[in-house]
Length: 195
Image (cartoon, rainbow, N blue to C red; front, top):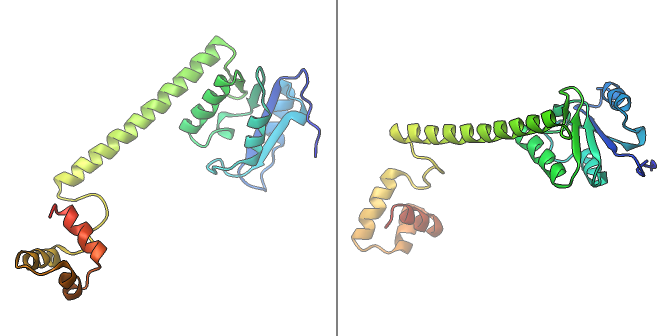
């Protein structure tokens, strides 16, 4: 296992490529040039969309109060804008700075802090847009007579016949046998119809 240089050094680097045939050299060279000690660079060879990234987890665990996490580019760190904001917010709460070399983002500077807040506002805006689109889509479907949720377990025609049989005094057990419906399905369907 490699020995990590920690004492008196505050830069910790993270680099990532999506596939095994891609090379980490470009990112690593940029971090070394920035001043990150090679022993403090963590890496992953996996898609950014993957939830589990061992190298990133190790880097985040390795960071301590006062350190700075350095990446070559923002998209190397976050799966999405929301995930990126979440990671950077967590770092900020732990008194850890963040630097993205390509974008020139440094949360220890006033402009870097502004950049971070703009990203936060964009993430919130993105969430709001998604919520609005979902609501609009549901409303449009409702106006066209399309009901959301799971499809009916019992067809509308069969349900009409079941209601008629219930009104005529047939027991639920008899209805299940006659119509070939499971009892739990019948009960759920009746509850959905408020019967």
